[in-house]
Length: 232
Image 1: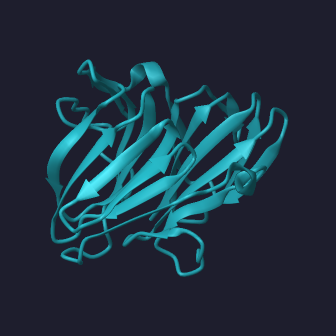
Image 2: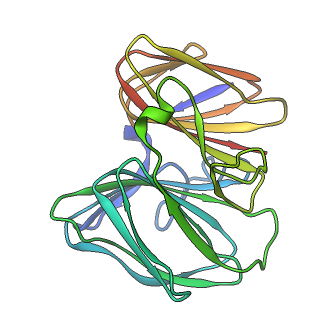
């Protein structure tokens, strides 16, 4: 089962400095049919104006993954962590027992991100933050784990959840597959380009809520950049 969620159907709000689109209920947007997808609770598609951002605010007991699509985001928190994550790279924050952080676009141009929240497997863990580059050529033609709770994904950023966040880049006409497995759910968004997933066509920034599909076969209609979340 693949439920396409067209970009135009997403909730959201434009705050001037922030144009936010929500794949799931978030803030003032509430849709009882789009509360979560397994352990995946939030997928926000955020466009952040230059020299603006999110001032310090708290989180608790949530795994927060930020995939930077354009520009860069600068993180700082009350645990002493700070860093700048550029387009194509990923940062992970495990909120655990509690963390206060800020995220700013300090760049002269627009920053665009996907921010993904996944419920942790255990609560009240120590908070942490990390980031790393993921060169585009490493994801050429295949899915690569960017953040994961599995010990098998040694090169991925660690999250405290039975979940994987993966990225892929395909050229038009290329195909790849992903073994989702029984009793798993997935949510797939093409950041750019058009793709076909097991017969369902997705435009750029559409979402696909997927279940009962043990293998995903993805074919790029255009050059595309994909982000996939695999959860129990």
